[in-house]
Length: 269
Image (tube, rainbow, N blue to C red):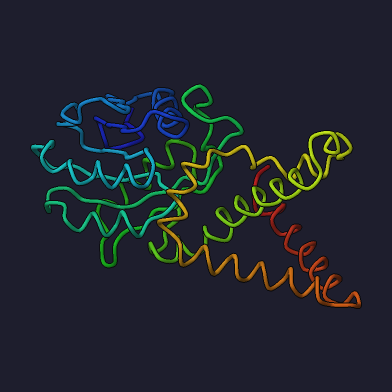
């Protein structure tokens, strides 16, 4: 049987939710590659000989690791990542030797829990996995398409800048809004009043338990697009606040209902 993926030795650097889930998905293949999984404190020398290296740490850690890989790898390799922003890592990748080929990646998948304990082999099933090749770069895009597909994800391609602009709206803005919402509600009502809250607040607040360290890193690497998304949201909120009638509120609610229906049709739960 032909292997589903061409990469026969895969190194995963960062062994949390995403890195651990990649390992589990690979081990579930009929013909899995040889897998090396590294976490914080492990020597990068162990990646030598890998033909695919996946950077699955935070954005800032991935940049630091990327700068060290040239000295650790004696041969050719493909490098990708799983970070939530792409432009800063692509900029860092321009310093790589030509034998190391980088294409950014971002699996649009997550879980209520975090860390290796929350990893599961079906995390990427049916989920988009965005690949962001540099302008004019085609190889090894086909190999990465096959790799992503073997993990159960749906690969798609866009530029690093377009990726960062879009995820500012569909990922980063929701996280910041939910955190600000829960902060405001909790601060102004207190723990006793929160017991009065219905399921609406509980459902809306699911993202508010996310770790701040990770999000500081993400926002810092995508500040311009995140600020633009926040400005657009603030504009909508101000329209509803300042409109003494109901036109602005009705328009926003009707638009929200329209786009929520599209979201439900286009995305798995």
